[in-house]
Length: 240
Image 1 (spheres, rainbow, N blue to C red):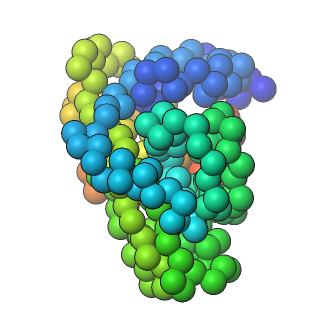
Image 2: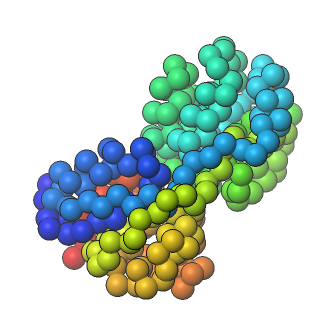
């Protein structure tokens, strides 16, 4: 595949999490510029997560909505048996869970929050306990959607998305900027300014990321389907 031959593509993922995506872009002919706009930090307070870990056997489901969540949660909990069924929002999250030796019971067809709620609506959730370890700031769609289905949902913070402490100068001009979460939109604009974005094509991984771009008056060039880095790559390679 060489659909991106000679094009300069910015990858905004956190440092250490861009390797596979960057390699796939290079295989497609792109000149890849890794410009991490997120740094993964620990919560300011682990107490809620620690209480959840201590009573892990009381949960019927554990829902992970990003690859960072299981990495942070299982690093904190250490190896222990889990009786709950485990949900991963998409393939990257599933892979992160499996790195720790756990089995994923459910991956929705649509790799977004709405897909998680829709997939779990096929199960009897009334009276069940659901644990949702996630970032400090995230939308309420999943917890509210599951509560509407009768579940008791506990949301605990296991990591924070923060601005990198040492950000390089933005490497303009570029052909593409890839956005893999709403946080990457907000943080790139904070670090590089709007001018860095306006002359580039903007590749969005999914609906929430596209929404974040539009809230800032920016229209995504395309939105990936499915909402994965593979979907981003395919969309950029096919764009004319």
